[in-house]
Length: 143
Image (cartoon, rainbow, N blue to C red; front, top):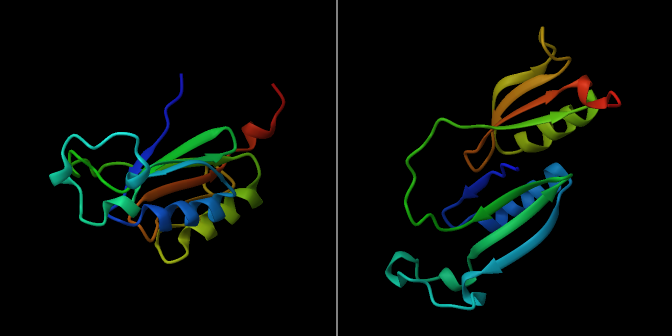
């Protein structure tokens, strides 16, 4: 089983997709705009006028994980208690990801050593998504 985060943006999904691709060294696996959809949406009144150019669904591969993005949230925004946690085996990789995601965002807890990790930090990126980034040396140990 997998659990893949799916993030919704109000018209900024393409900007977010490119930002996360660069910050996390990801690869865009799929991108479909509303105008490319093979069928008409069930509720066209729920879509903005410029929906044809907006992202209906995108997938970004980051290592063996997926981050999915879209521009429209049909059910609205209701849940605010969340963060995406990134764990890296190497301290320098965790620090690089933290610094990249901070660009244009807000540091909630500076990246540094804690009793449970040689490097741990929390931030809210320029899109309002909260991230927890940590070095977990256990990930580098062979199974």
